[in-house]
Image (cartoon, rainbow, N blue to C red; front, top):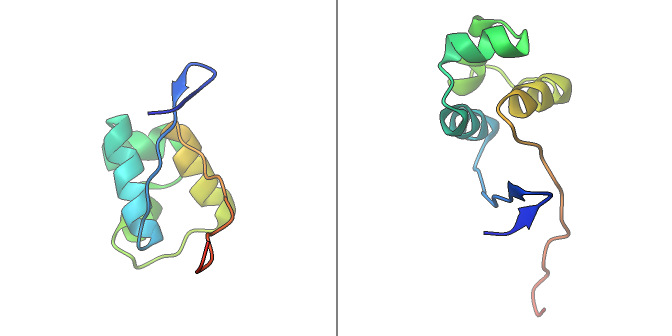
Length: 82
């Protein structure tokens, strides 16, 4: 596992946002209620996002992930033939 400034760098792929939120919350050891309290985002919003009933705004998604200790980074995709 690669490290950046003493932190482990995790590479993960998700099929949707709900999967990403559940994974980050579980990795951080939060319950939905604890994540809601720590992030300032309602428990109902987190529940609905995890069930796929709500697509959170980018701002809310980043806040949820940051509260869990994660961020999103973008990298160029490999194209066929590379």
